[in-house]
Image (cartoon, rainbow, N blue to C red; front, top):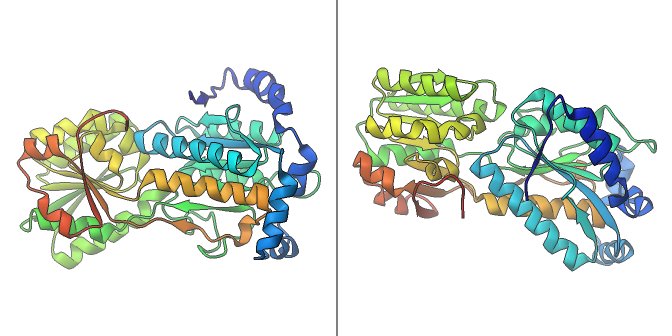
Length: 380
């Protein structure tokens, strides 16, 4: 399904013609209102009662209901596209199982990595009184959380937010803790095991002396991983060269600068802005015989030597399950622990590996799964 993208020139028209025009899609507003999450501790305690019979009763009373579920993607890249597709597929599946409708078709958006666009989307979704928002990636999750927190509904409740692919929810200030997020928010995290990536890097080339770090310093998702990378390299006596960029042009220049400095390998965490630029820079690294290690399998899909991290289909599926639990079973996001996925899948681009002449078969013994892939724009 094609995702909507709001531009400033069309924002007013979209809000009036698209979101207002779809107001009837909510169907049972009374049923949806009954499931809304408030910030009060009493509501959170009541909603989180672990009682199988009560949960069954809630689901039965919701049968036939329709819920407006907004999905807001930060930017168009292979990993985030994969998550959105998984969320949509699981919402359809859960809707059939529970006898309800999750209407996301009229509420799926792409923030285009633009703060103004994301804030406009948030305003429109609040005006449309959607029942739940699923932001995909840290920057858009922060926008949606701030917007919903500042806009309580008439009954005092806040629109629940279930984020996906947020690498450091606590560090980004989205949740109070991973076990008890607080307020109206919870979700799934794709936190990266940075040490594991560097262990693989040294397994492929134990003699590395200088590593390049390529990332967007404005991305909160990169902060913890970059700090961990520096600490690892300092412990191992490896020199570090950092280069950053905020858009494709800057990232391309940063890649050139890293190669000019003589780095022997490059690491990028789960950074969506570098991810979107990968197809434009991967050949630079191949020509220089320098392996690029990324914090997601989509890096390898788009030409990097290796991507390491979680299964994004599983991440999207888990996100949708949490959303359904909130809407249908009355769970409170405030006390639903943030879910993390197992980290340990190494995805190697076999074309790139052959081009730079680097053996990777030892990875199979050092991670939970080794996947081989070839260069493409999107996952099949």
